[in-house]
Amino acid sequence: MTTGGHEPLRTGAASAEESTGLMLWRVTNAWQAAQRAALRPFDLTHVQFVLLASLVWLRGTGPVTQRGLANHAGTDAMMTSQVLRTLEAKGLVERAAHPSDARARALRPTPAGTKLANRAVGAVEAVDDEFFGVLGARAAAFTGMLGVVHAARSRPTRS
Image 1 (cartoon, helix red, strand yellow):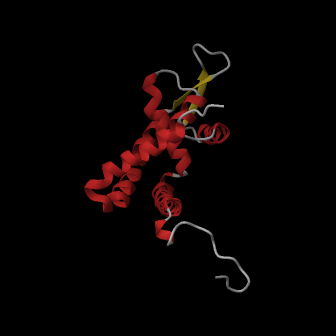
Image 2 (image 1 turned 60 degrees about the vertical axis):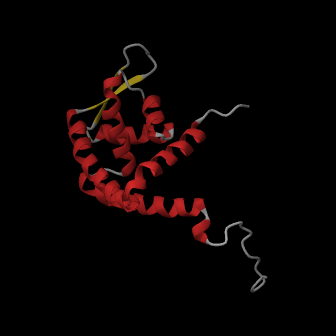
């Protein structure tokens, strides 16, 4: 049935709550808002935090390149470059000559960047604990299911 001359949405979902994509969208937006609020006192955006924390996490694995950091964080290479410039201007990240690749730069957090990441991660994890706490014992299974979806979407496609 149409109303006012407009066609209804042709969806297989009987309600919005049955749409996995819409529910993921709603949850993601609410979670990101909570993370933005938690990171505001640290003067970090969420993506700045993710890249800085990822860099601190990866630094013991050898030289970290921009591409390696973007792959670990799951961020776009161009956006990663822009955010790294901001983090560098804030004195939180340094770029140095890569020891084995003259075309690449080795990234490392500054001592101030490491301290900030370690302070901010507590706030971020507190948001996660509160936000996903409603899942109780199912939280680990939920994280595992997200990992399954991520792994399936991260595989290289064949042409």
